[in-house]
Image (tube, rainbow, N blue to C red; front, side):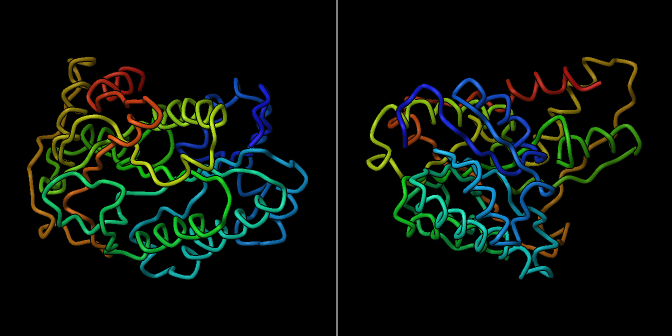
Length: 298
């Protein structure tokens, strides 16, 4: 990857939670070209090759993914096409032009049975089609021979799109009571923080020897909570900002009380020590970021 001050950067998934933030965060590093579905159809090898060869990026940041976790159980082929085969094609074309790739993965590559936070070298065992396709996408990059970073994150939310935070705040204003799962533990991670951290990583990575630090890194907010704890804190912050707003009463429930098409890991905690050791970067605590987000939602 070039060490010039102005990288040519291709960002995929421009319209997603992380992709939208990446455009802003990566711009100081060089010339950014951002694509959505209209500009690059990830189900088409020809489209991927055409865009990458035309832009000729030195760095591809792949924020595009099939993320409908439950729907993936019945749309296995489409999930695989976007999360595995498109990643394989991106890596092939990147290899042909000497580009590096930063790619996002998920806590769902683990089964959640470990009692402590997961480290990058822990055995994977996805419980869902989504988790399996994300793991297979990781392995395509590992086998590609190009400089790459896989950044595993968890419980992503933002001020846009469809996510747990916005859904909870909406429902809390409409319903008298909400039942929220309390036995799945992880770190809610703001898309803005993911993008900013990615830019900081990319800046350090390209200044050193990318081949030596290629691999998988865990990248989540600091701290941990349950979905119930996340919802309770969001509603508390909303009530502080808007004392006249009526908020739903929350009831903690077990995963078994809320069946879904795809199984979720109960322990989604990821140890981010390697990220701090290699790049000197530590993510903000989830509560600090959530406070900023809720204050900005009107």
